[in-house]
Image (tube, rainbow, N blue to C red; front, side, top):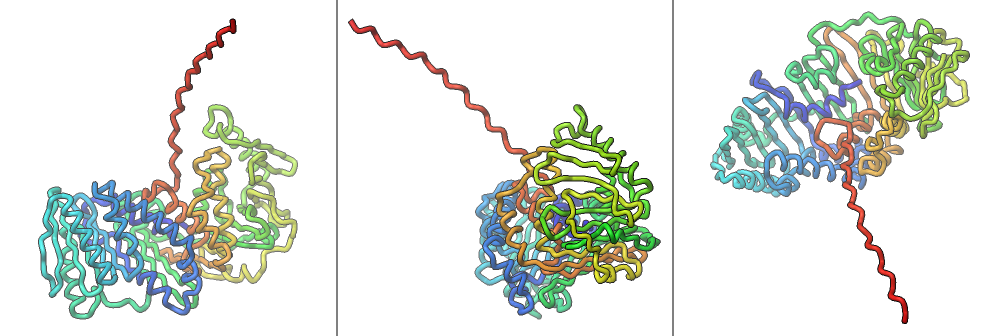
Length: 524
C-alpha cells in the first residue's frame, strides 16, 4: 500500500505544487505532539524509540538539511532556521496549506514554552530585518503580533499567545490567526481539543497535484488519516475517496498454502483494488496474475528470505518468457547492459536464476505441485522446512467481506529484510551510490530491530472509498519505515526522492613532472 509514503511526501509536494484554485485548504493536520504522547503509561515502545541516541541523531541531521534548504530558498542565514526547527512536532500542532496566488498559503500553530515562542518571534523578526523591512506591530485579543509585507507581495504574520506560537504565510491566513488569538484568549486553545485522535491528516485537491495523485493510484480526490495511541499500539485508519466507485467484485481467495511455509516473519495477500502496488512491480517483469491475486511472504531464519507467488496460465511458458526478456534486457546496448550476474534458464525444472550476485540469489520457478498454476519468486532459497502457513493466520482475513488487502509482519524482523531489499536493484545494476550502509539512518533502522513486534494492516472497499486500518507500534510498516528513513537520510532531503545523488567526481591531480637527477661529478 502506498498511503504512508504519500503522507511522507505530501507536505513537500504541496508546498511547491499548488496553483490558485480555491480558498479551501489542500492539507489540514492536527498532531497532539510527541512530548504529550511519551508522557502516557501505554507508550512504552514509542518512548523507548524517542529516547534513544539513534533517533536524536537522525532527527538532528534531517533538521539540519531542512534548515540549509530553507536558508538557500530564502537567502537567509542557516542559523535562523537551525534555532527554531527543532521545536517542530514536539508540542501540539495545527498546520494548514492552501493554494495561494503564487505560492501556497501556510498556517502553523504550535504549543510551546514562552522561551521557545520568544525565540521564534525573535528569528522571524530577523528574517524581515534581513530584507530591510520593519515588522508592523498588531494587537489581537490582547496579544501582540507582527505583520510583514514583503516587496514581492508576500505577507507574513506571527506572534506568541499564551503558550501558542502563531504563524501565517500569505494574506489569506490572517483571518485564521485572528480567530485563533480570540479562541486562545477565551479558552486557552486555538481550536477545541480532539480527545478521540492523536493525529488527523486530511488531503484534498489531489487533482491539482498529479504526482501526489499517482502515489495513491486511480482517480483519488481526497485522503483522510486518523491515528490513536492505545495500549502501546497506534490504531490507524485511512480513507481514500475516489471519483468513481471501486470494484468490489473479488474472486474467492486461492492461497498457495503448500508453497508458503514456516517459519514466517511476514505475509501479504492482495486482490482486486488491493493489487495496486503489486501490479506496478509485476508489470515491470510482465507477470499478470490470472486470478487477480498476489501473495508475498518472508521467512524468519535469514534476512534474505523474501518471496512472492502469482497464478499464471502456463508456468513453464511464463518462466521461459521472463528468461528471454532478462536476456534481452542485459544484452550490450540494452537498458540493463551494466547489470551484473549471469542469467540461467533451466526449462526442465522449470526455473530461471540470476546468479553471481553478491548476497542475493534471485529466481523464478514453479510452485509446489499442489498449488497448481502458481509461480514463485524470491531473492534467496527458502527454508527446507515444509510446514505450511498456519490456518490461524489465514482465518484472520479470508472471510472478511470486501477485503482486498491483508498484511501481517513482525516489523523488527521485516525491517531488517527491507533494508537490504530496497538496495537490491542497486546491487544488480552496480549503482554503488545507491548502496547505503554507514549512515545515521541505517543506525536508526538497526536500533529498531529488537523493539518492534506485530503490525497488522488490511484494506476494504465500499463504494467510492478504500478504507485501510492498521495496528502497529509506531504507526508504520517495516517498508514504510525503511523508505521514510531513506528519504530523511538522503543528502538531497527534503527533495521528494529516494534516489541518492551520484558522488561528485574528484578531479584528477596533474602528475608532477619529475626532473631527472643530475649525475654527481666524477671525482678527480
